Amino acid sequence: MAKKTLKAGIIARTTCWNNTPLQEGLLEEIIESIHEQDLDIFLGPEWLFIPKDRLYTKEEKDIISSKLAAASKEKNTLIIPGSIMWFDKNLFYNTSPIIAEGKVLGEYHKHFDCGSTFKAKNRGCIDKEYFKGHSFERHKWREYRMSIEICADQGELARFLGTRPQEPLLDLYFLVSCGPYLRLDIPVKNLGYGLCSNGDSLKTEVVRKENIDGDEKRRLLKVIHSKNNIKDYIPRIDIYELEMN
Image (cartoon, rainbow, N blue to C red; front, top):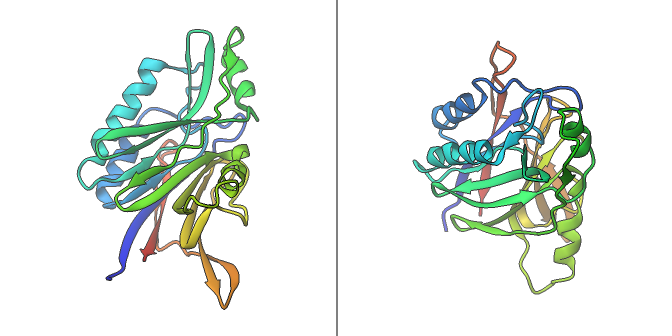
């Protein structure tokens, strides 16, 4: 069977604590990069989508997702744009949509607070409670099994799958982060990949799990190309090539 190569673009943008990415033009630049770079995969960090002095409404969050969904249609790009801080009624959320096939396949809501309340309260969201996610959604994209976690949740999915040995491991695992990089126990099969966009630094990360003579190792992939821009609100996109078996 011929090997396939996937082209993945990972955004490098600081989003930690009081660093708030300018939202004006951000969505358009991401969509433009997906088309310009002919990406199969796009990944962003935690808190990439958060206004400076408020949270997004549910309607605004849905508009962001629907515009990205339209951008995914051309070549069935898998888009995990990083997390969106938003509110609805008496709750606020830290959510990463999972987008492909021209639609939203699902939404991952961060399980542990770990900074979400800090972000919300600093934006006047003092009368609402944090929605604590609890699901471990796995999705099929093209012929690959994939899933994601947000930042402090990392490791929960590996433990969950560890209680289900009959369930196959993933081909692709995504960490939407603002602090942690990929742990050793990413829940992917041999020759599977873990990808991380970390808003705590300007370093992106892709690793491949490789079993060599019974010894499990992780190979760190190199960036093959970076798109650097001058204006602060326009992020850098690091490009990786993933050889799939």
